[in-house]
Length: 358
Image 1 (spheres, rainbow, N blue to C red):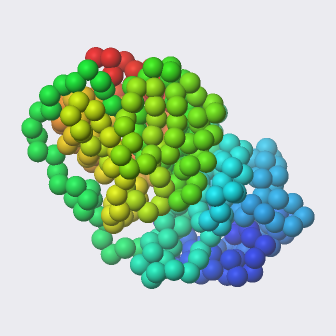
Image 2 (tube, rainbow, N blue to C red):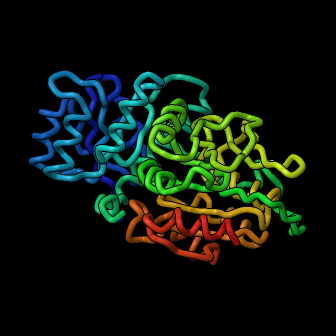
Image 3 (cartoon, one colour):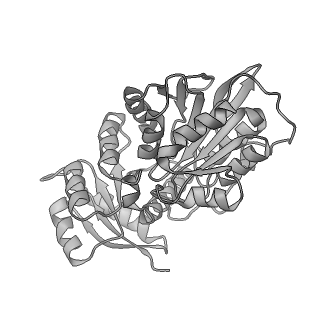
């Protein structure tokens, strides 16, 4: 298999050097060039079109968003936005996702050795995921070394017991998404009525960006959307977005109501928060009171958990290939027999409402 060819664009020489070192250490990635600004990048693109571009937001002569919009209108290439960990800039990053970027990564920074290895591995995984992105699907509707073992949800929660859950009057919906998921989630949540069942979402995003993402969705949707906090109640008409980066988000039951627990833990399926962890917690604590939805994304996070939800009596839905920016996560779930229904992006809101009403 040919390596993913990457063009790095950043005005900082140190960031260009660090990104080149991180990406080049992965045998599945080749950095073909590193440019200081979009004008230099355009010259490289004329000579060789990369599979993926990593793009800084703030640059001299032309900002990243302007370059991204021109690139998407003239010569679409999967773009991953590269940002510093600054919450004030997260709104700009969301504009980039709306303009056509497929994902966000944080610029390399110093820290605890284990966290550096995790961050580098996630940078490489994100870039490789972007290379698989189908940009037309929107219109349709590492580290230096990766962790030695790919952990499953067993690292955070024991498997479901198989004991049937008593049914309650309320249903809870759990949604998992990754590459391409920000705009896909927007499409689903905008289609929901104000009295929709309570929803918990894991969308793979870096820390600090999920709060701005939730605010953005809240301004667009009839349902109320917020970043999840430990102990939040899952209520009808409310959507809780798992905070990105350092903790897992799980569903717990307190009497007849559901709450979320936001807890530390290792990377699961190479992600934190992990869709598998959320789905397993729903299988254990909600059973047939739950609906599981897996959407666009690279890899297999969520596939095992969705099957566990189905085996516990939950209704399960997977996004179809035609409307997935990256079909990896839904494909894995479908291959395992985890999906009751396969639906296009435009039909997922209807399907989850039907499933919750049964």
